[in-house]
Length: 188
Image 1: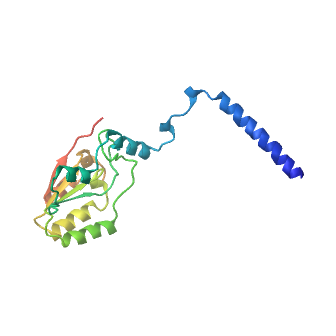
Image 2: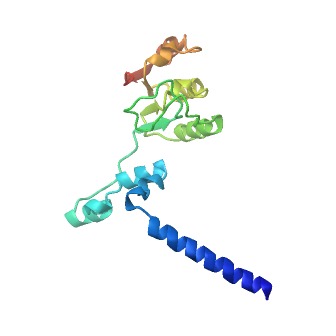
């Protein structure tokens, strides 16, 4: 009985406190939705096309009677990691020196296995952060070249990686492996 009475008093006190707090809320001090959403949630919300009433891709094609057929895959683009020696504003994957996500040897071996069994791919385009900073980069390039001697190998390089410790021979390695470079300069 005493426990029941104590609960009733506690409940009453809580609801009184709650009501008082609700009365004191200043609408200007209410946190915005932004404060509750994670960065990924906010990005997803910004990229959403639902508020613009954009139709789904398949529905649009069907409505406009546009045939859509898959062609053979010619380019295999491989993002081998988000670690980079730069942190550029224009980077669409937000690579930086702080990012540690890197492709491992097991995944590289799986890609090499699939590439060996494919006859339509003519270009392997390696990107990342700074792909050269992944410890599997040279292994990947050497094995692609060995498996497919005529394969076009593209390295998307920010050029400043050539001056990183341990990369002194990178330009010679890329030349020896006949890699094509697509270079971007850092954006500050």
